[in-house]
Amino acid sequence: MATNNKTGSNNILVPEARQALDQMKLEIASELGMSDYNSIDKGNLPSRQNGYVGGYMTKRLVEMAQRSMGGGTTTR
Image (cartoon, rainbow, N blue to C red):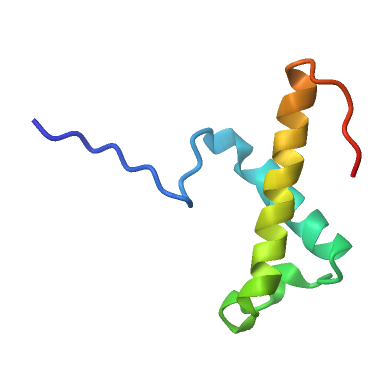
């Protein structure tokens, strides 16, 4: 019996988190100098710029997880 267990990079495991993740993405893009990131055609952006946004999101999410597990504070 096959299971339909799709896990990909665009699947959000907690649907309620989508709004918070979208807000974080816009904040990080703004910090990186892409203030109109929401209206930019991502297909025309260099992969390096898109990668920065995703990379910083990942870094910040890891920091948040470490703090919640009692790992103390981290520096940015």
